[in-house]
Length: 231
Ligand code: C5P
Image (cartoon, rainbow, N blue to C red; front, side, top):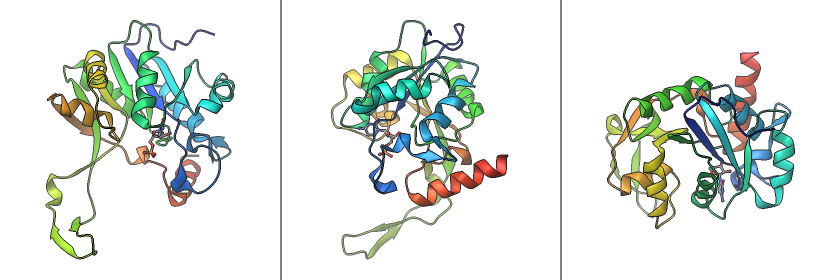
């Protein structure tokens, strides 16, 4: 099977899925934990593959699970699977290196955001296509945020109106992401942070409540409910 979805698509999606998922408790690597009987990664890839602009999906799998992940995803969608690295950034870099010629837009999407709707993939890609160098989906911050000292004493209250919670997929012109990774120094938890360091403007589009990052057991339970409610 060719690892290509829509041959006319202009988007490659990188899926770092090599994390251990320690905060979910003991068990398999996080991307392979089950949600409604299927691994998180299967849910995520199925939704990415349903986005019409997607040409290629590259998954960075736990190195010991590369063959298992290939077999797992073969019935879901044509994907390229590469071994991930010790840090998320290294996993993204490994996936980026495997993108074939063609796509001019690269999205980076955490497998842990397993219920992200294809519409969000399209809206991030459309903003890059429309001329933005880097695009992130965001939600307003609903809680009051305090800055706290080492002794758990409040230092101050942060102005919430200027804050956004950032999701994935994060989208980039391919050359912008490649340059940021080539220049990368310290490891960061998101790719927009890398391009910010290069002085590139990062634009926001509205995120989705369904793009919640499944990190703790509570998030897994919430995702089960969302899936059940969606029928
Ligand atoms: O650990 P965290 O939840 O921030 O991980 C975000 C995403 O990065 C997850 O999908 C995880 O599988 C991935 N990751 C990776 N390689 C690592 C660490 C995390 O692909 N070494």
